[in-house]
Amino acid sequence: MIETKPTTAAQKETARFTIEYSQYLDKAGKLVAALPAGYDAQTVAALYKAILRTRVFDEKALALQRTGRIGTYASSLGMEAIFVGAASALAPDDVLVPSFREHGSFLVRGARPSEILLYWGGDERGNSYAKAARDLPYSVPVGSHSAHATGIALAFKLRKQPRASLAIFGDGATSKGDVYESMNFAGVWKLPVVFVINNNGWAISVPLQKQTAAETLAQKGIGVGIHCEQVDGNDVIAVQSACKAALDRARNGEGPSVIEAITYRLTDHTTSDDASRYRSDDEVKAHWEAEPARRLESYLTSIGKWTKEDQEHLLAQLKAEMDAETDVYLKTPAQDPVTMFDYTYAKLPVELARQKEQFLK
Image 1: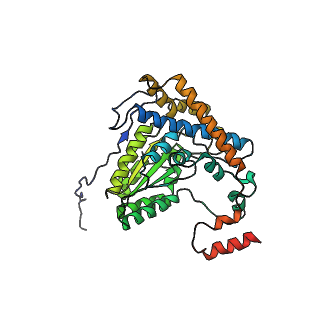
Image 2 (image 1 turned 30 degrees about the vertical axis):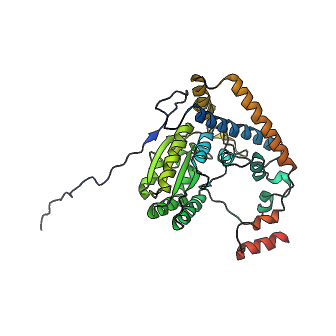
């Protein structure tokens, strides 16, 4: 019998990674780092106004839903800094690829509140896309739009256009193959796309720790070889500056990025959800102390650039705008539901043609 001695393989470190975290304003509205170049009181005030506009729209939409004038609605309460920060970082020719609660992004990009309400119009308006689609075989997988953002970025690269796409999706979507495959493809082809993760801690009722064993969601970009970082998602300055830098890199041919924005969903997932069944009031109350609007107001007040009168005037102005936009929405004739088949394909695929024929019967 021949005796063999155990051998020890040579080992060496082949790579090391760090996830950087950015924050400029803490939850009390105090600066913890010097503001990036180009940020002054006027710039910060504009971001604050955009966040408040989003919040007032949200309040109006919830009131409409509770009174039966729009369908199921997904609030953006507490997450506005991500949507405002990301959308305001885009150039006019860039493309935003959103999920479903990015109302602040839509407003920043020029959508009218009445147009967003039409999207949520739902069954209560009679002839609506939601009612028409209910009985048809359809599916809208969470995170599937990440592939659209990657495809758009590929088109930009093939056309040699200095443009970028930006997709926003939640923490739950990062557990989907669609998202990881989109990131991988973007990394291989070095595409001009930015993936923004709205990490609000909950995938409907599933907490983050039950979704992943990863220390951060940002590090999922490491596995596909692309730039990744984490920001305070309640700090609109941190979100906007990170997205601006990522978009600049993308347009300059330096490839894609993943930005994980840490925030918290302060209300139910949608109006058909009851978050009190799976999280405590104390948990939610603690997160209210870090919400994005309060810290911006505190900062602007502390430097003498915002007053109680400014706040009252802006809120009155925004409420008047939302009342007027609600009137526009309510007076808009309902669209014929059959038109949902008309605006995606130049030539309707066989399966959709069959569904349209079925619908018309």
